[in-house]
Amino acid sequence: MCMDLRKNDAYRIGPHDRKVVTLPASSMPNPTQRVFIERRVAELDLMTNPGPAKEIDATIGAIIVRYATARQDDDMMRARMEGYRIVLRDFPAWAVREAYARWLKGEIGREYDASFPPPERVLHDCAKSLVMATIGQKVGLQLVLDAEGYQPLSEAEMAERRQRLDALMQNIATTASPEDRGPGKLKPQPETPEEQARRERILKNPGKGILAELREKMEADRAAAE
Image (cartoon, rainbow, N blue to C red; front, side, top):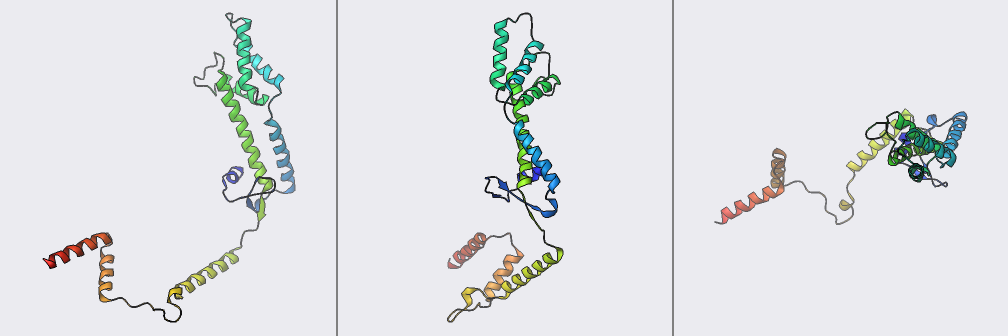
């Protein structure tokens, strides 16, 4: 339901500057569900905050130690750690750790080979997608909280509206147009034999366009003049 509400184009902007959609009254959350959703929205909001920096550094340290080699000196390890910090410091610590876990499981990365250290960009993209998914869930749940309920029409009300619409369409069809009303106005004239014949030709051969018909008439007039 959250995904459907996010795709809904029928909405208004409320005083809180958020989208307000409408839901059937039967689909509105009850008080218990509303409390649960509000708690979940608050949790998701906290989950999108960057840091803590210490936990991010702990994950980066685990990566450095896991892939340390005898050829690496202290300067190389510090440079590698700084590179991870630059691309990952703006993400929540849980997203960084989950990105590293997915790398070890072979779920991310072009080669899916965990025998070498993960590129910084791969971890960055994975952490970003996790945060965006969290924000999307929060937005969807907030739409549920902000939604307004309405009572759908009953079958009897729908039938009455259909009858009123049919009566209105019938009235429009049987009423003269405004151009035909008032003194001095001409009333529609019956078709002439030529108009009737032309209409029959069009009905029998609808593929022939008006331009083709005019071209034939011009050729006939030219032949008659010659």
